[in-house]
Structure formats: structure tokens, C-alpha cells
Image (cartoon, rainbow, N blue to C red):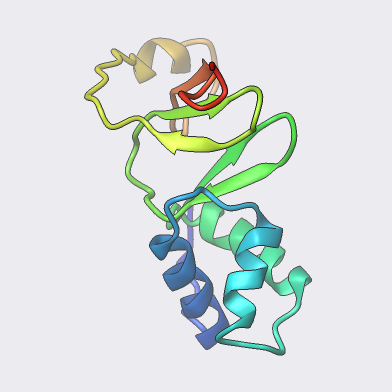
Length: 127
């Protein structure tokens, strides 16, 4: 079961900056943005809080082959991952995916969620 943690000043700033970003930043990229508002924050603090916020379901963690990316929009939605430039984009068009949680749980597994990631080349890289 997930337990809600106190929203500390640092955690609030991290969450606000992540929710403003539309680029699905890495922890290092987010660190640069957060340091403008909280200069003494460490990269380790960013990593710890991103993991905590992800575990609590406040953000989405997107695992790619090159790095983890983070999305301030925790609502389930698909992502496009460019295999050349490694950028991550929200897929704006509606996607309908049928997901039967109960049939998977019949195998003895416990399901917490699911995600849809589409891979390929973005508009700029396909040229």
C-alpha cells in the first residue's frame, strides 16, 4: 500500500518544475531547472524525490535504454520515444488499449499499472 509523504519545500519545487516541463526531462535536466529556485539542492535529493514521487503515483517514470525520463502528468497516457534523438513525447491522439488486469492476476502476479510506449523516429529525425 502506498503511503503519502509530507510535501516538503524541495519536493514541492521538484514537482512544480516537472509539471511545467513538456520535455520529459531526465533527473539531471530537472536538477538544472530546480537549482534556479533552490540553489543548494543536490542531484541526490532530486533522484530520491523522483523515486518517492513515482512510487506514490504523483509522477510517471519512463525507462528508456539511455536514461530514465520523468513526466509530471501521472494520468495514464501513451508516449512516443524517438530511437535516434532519444526525446520522449506525449502521444496526443487518443489511444484505446484493452487491458484485462484480472486475467493477468490469475497467473499469481499483482498488477499495479500499465503503460504504452511507441518507438520509432520523430518528425525531425526521420528526414
